[in-house]
Length: 194
Image 1: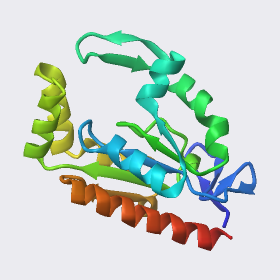
Image 2: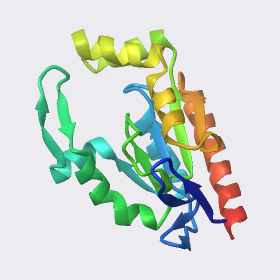
Image 3: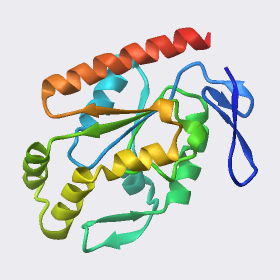
């Protein structure tokens, strides 16, 4: 199914299963959320269950040097969003890709058929982040991000409402249930697109 979305800038974009006028046979998913919500665990388990390609943007940035340096305050690379998008463009076109990153507003909207925002209870998230040695500004910034649902709002502002879903990710059971429900969603999407 090809859908055209008209943007405020007057440009139109082909959506949902369409790239350059051709349909994808497999959907692309973005798994996003505050650091510590289980993105990598969920995305890698889902990739294994579905035989999709898994891309952790943080790892890609380091491997391919797709950054503009190091941020001492937050102890992380400052990613170059344009370089990341250039690197991923051809990969995303084919479908069957699961992207894992804690931001979502810079990716082209046409890339994703499902955007999953993982949510975690504050006490669980705090424990996960402190085990990663997050402290000071980095810890408080990420906790506030989850409390104020910053990434959920970013996803809702950046993508069509019907493709954004928030899932709880507090326990191993939650992660397992999320992988099962997303696997089922992929199967349904593929049967509709044939």
